[in-house]
Image 1: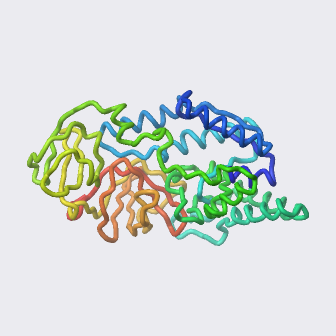
Image 2: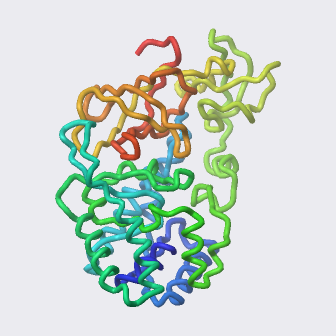
Image 3: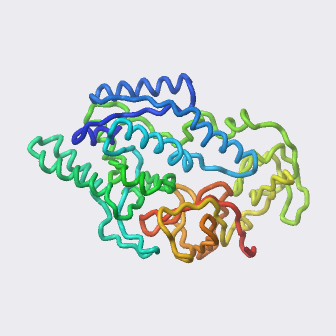
Length: 386
């Protein structure tokens, strides 16, 4: 919403609501609210039914991954394959110059140089300038030249031929770059993230200036398709068939029984459904044996992991150092990265870290620049050999 408010001060803007979950009452209500907000802002509003594509690229793989003992990250796949793909297609149809979303991230230019030592001199901070200028222009109509020049310059640079990269948002708490590491340069050249250089308080202030009460609503942290359910309840309703199997310790001894590995994720310590005389941690899931491997918390450390289905916007060297995030709000971890092939890499951490979960994404950064990432395939626990 704040993105549309900022952009409409300089451009003609078309707004879009995605239908992802079918014809539900909640979706109808959300669409009606979006349409009313667009009307108040004097903007055209489109509704795109992406239900089938969302089911194919997000929901079905999400459930299948849980059935097979993985912990998927649906937003990572939804952004490139559903949302941004649809936005690019609609922008082309409407003959728009670019697309914009309310994600907290930034786009910047640089030189790939075939490696990680990239030229940061021309990193675009103009999204922050863009927002500041929009506010000045809104309050002072004499700022038209500043408004037009800065807005045009931002779009021109975004569509330039220099390599373009995704960057962390200015507000680290709100940063969403982790979820968008698979966006291609072609998309990044066309996209603006108007709130990426702003804090959440600044964004709420922008919305409040328009007299829209939504600025005080609490941010949702849940997966969009849960509709207020807990993840556990959602999974139980869809794949919750009982398939009893063993809890095993690290020596392979049976220490209990579970009723389905879909209930567990690597690193889990709570809601194990059994008492073992001490607190235990899930160290691994073995779908072929329908087994859940448990150990003590000190056992839940890894020295490295292997990623598959990797994506890099530009060629990377065979070996490079980077920081790695294993979840969106996770601490950046120093690591050495070795490409095994075009789509598989070995990530060796500088110090032992707590286990990630197969199916999650690991995203590489150089300072704030997103270098790429991949899907966790195998964990190499401390003292394990690759």
